Length: 102
Image 1 (cartoon, rainbow, N blue to C red):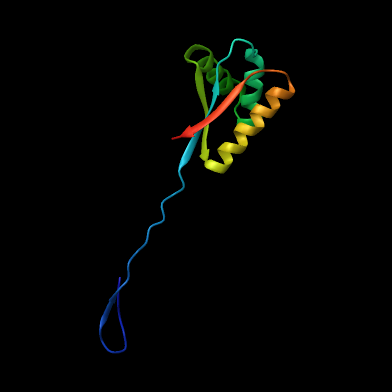
Image 2 (cartoon, helix red, strand yellow):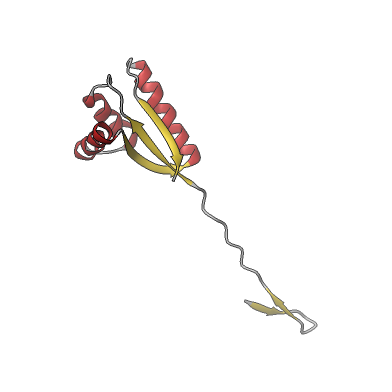
């Protein structure tokens, strides 16, 4: 965009673009002790998945070692990780939840 000043000189306005914040993947990791039903419940409770979605992610965790639960800004991802880990410990399960930059 170009505008004119009172003295007839031209000013060019620079457009600044703000980059969106980096996003982080929240993942649940496989272990040999946490029951599959508990993992499905966690995915439903903390990530808003329906039973079918949660079961699909749980099977991915079981067969591949990790499953993506969601992608969030850093502070939201960190909160989700903390909530899941706290909930798992309260129920005496070693379920691990981690985040990594997308």
